[in-house]
Image 1 (cartoon, rainbow, N blue to C red):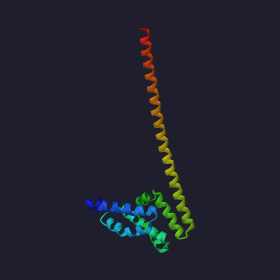
Image 2 (image 1 turned 30 degrees about the vertical axis):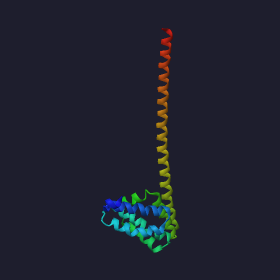
Image 3 (image 1 turned 45 degrees about the horizontal axis):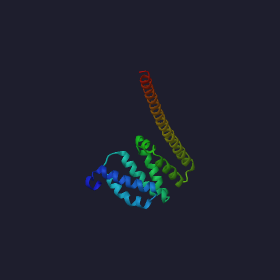
Image 4 (image 1 turned 60 degrees about the vertical axis):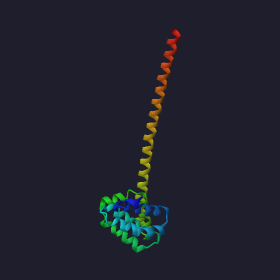
Length: 169
């Protein structure tokens, strides 16, 4: 489909999805092979989140290869990242797990523990949100069942009145 459209934005989304797939399936060799295309696709775009996502995927091979210098450079680059972009990345559990992994590559145990605490906190918040959504859905289902039962009672009353009315006549 993208061959027909091929706008800068669709090219970015295509390569972002592809590298993201390789990242999440642990296929680092294919991720590394697609990174240059993702880097080219993000060049014409001005969105800082898209550029930060590319930087995220660029550091993944460094973590897998335990390249301390590359990981340290990435972590240093975070200091100049806009706070809104950082918040966006830190809302993602995969990213937070990667932050833990990066600190472990550097053998910075206190920072790894802090990164893990962020991961655990976000995971807990996600679980609470899911449970809240599930309880809302459960309440909606309960109201639907109550309405159905009330409708059945009303229908039964009408039938009873009709039967009594026919019996009297």
